[in-house]
Image (tube, rainbow, N blue to C red; front, top):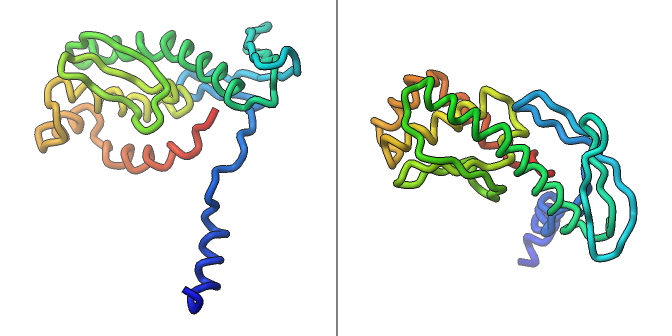
Length: 184
């Protein structure tokens, strides 16, 4: 180890052990639906954080701003509400247009998945889909809808996806690195 000390130290500097501290956003771009929201912050009541919509596309977050877990929590809950409002109807429309049978939709803030499909045909969507471009959201929709017919990633599954998104390989390649940029 002593012989590799310089290299080890260089790698440790390059890849920090802990994530950077949470920085609440001053704006939230819901790219999928073309909305941009401004977020203002005000220190207030300890041990509590609240979010209130003010005016057109303005969010007011107040409370214990020294508690990033609480600040992030109210912003993620707001994002989930927005996602239910926008993504669920959009997915239902897409399913109908493409001839898929959709049993139900749920929305949450998953940490590792864009979406999933249960054996019953219920699709779960990640609220963070609102933060990416519409064509990428549509790809995720088609991917999950294809799982209502093929509960695997078989050749038949990818052929089904390709019918509706011919450039799905490009979309998949672009989608993977987006994950790291979508903190709220």
